[in-house]
Image (cartoon, rainbow, N blue to C red; front, side, top):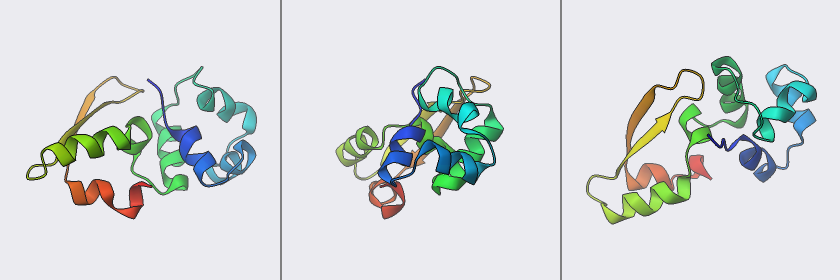
Length: 106
């Protein structure tokens, strides 16, 4: 599964070293996750989400695609289905157009 950690980090102008310091790890530990060659443990995923100030599911989801789906069904929004990279369980979250368009998901 492709994670959005690197994308969100770069959008904020953060370096791998800065993110590593914010989550209490080393660049050596975070680089394989950023490069997609290693999946993080749930603890690392949670710390990245907290540092980036986003919900964990956003690290695993294409927000642009969700906005398009939600716009197509503006009454009900869309059902977000993500798979936990740690345990493989499916997570289902219903998001409205307003929630997906909020500045929290930029």
